[in-house]
Image 1 (tube, rainbow over the protein chains, first blue to last red):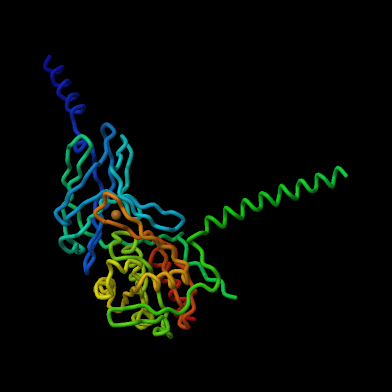
Image 2 (cartoon, rainbow over the protein chains, first blue to last red):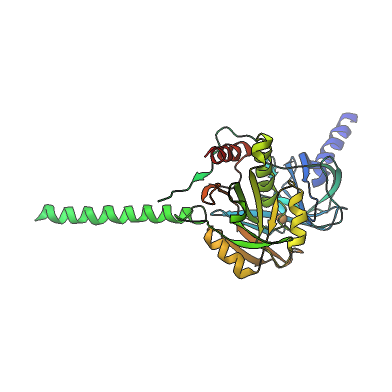
Length: 156
Length: 197
Ligand SMILES: [Cu+2]
């Protein structure tokens, strides 16, 4: 009987866990912004171990407004767009990364200097929230041996 | 007679498919290829006054078109370029002139730009101008950009734009077209080629 109660307790925990508890955030960081830069972005890798969920909002003390955005690369034309939510399917890794999905800081209240730690709170579709502390990085492309060089112009 | 007809059929069929393939190729290249003779002289406004490409004759010039409100695409490109220059020996790095051209003159004043670019390197130059003048330079360099209102976003509007670093040789001739996401070491290799030339 004791064991039954224990099993019930464990099961109910798993079922009742909200999105914030089921979601594991890896390698979060924000992009450095200073010298008149009014906007910046945060990136991270997210794995949802529970029921399908979604990020529907985000907050931070560093900017007046925080939005969820993505980038569309339309034949080389970069189109940044606001999106209503970031879907988190069960068991899949969702990557917020430069050139793609991001948490967008609009109208920064302060500079984001390399080495700073800043706060971001993610709000999920079930109303649960997850508070994060993220480091500020200077973001550039990593060395990729295979990646292409500039295209040489053809001159006549 | 029958063989002639078959021959015609095959000629038409083959040309049709060749046309399809070419069209596909052409469409894919839109916004990612340069017309021969692209680039050339321009004059735009810096905080210190007008700046022309020819002011930098004798230097290798790296040009990027973007806007200051861009949170991600532009900073990545500008850091990649800055890092590529930093990887050069100091006396060579001094012979590279990085230029940022804002396609968002409504929000980016030459004064704000001059501060913004200094966040990357001391000799970075920030330029902008009236829309007609920017349009002219954008056409020359086959830059595509577009002001797009964003409903429900505090951004108000964004500037969709191609993300390319243009490398101009010491004589003012556009030589390299560096696509988005090219890492610093690759840009560095192209800069070295132009500095040696
Ligand atoms: Cu954004």
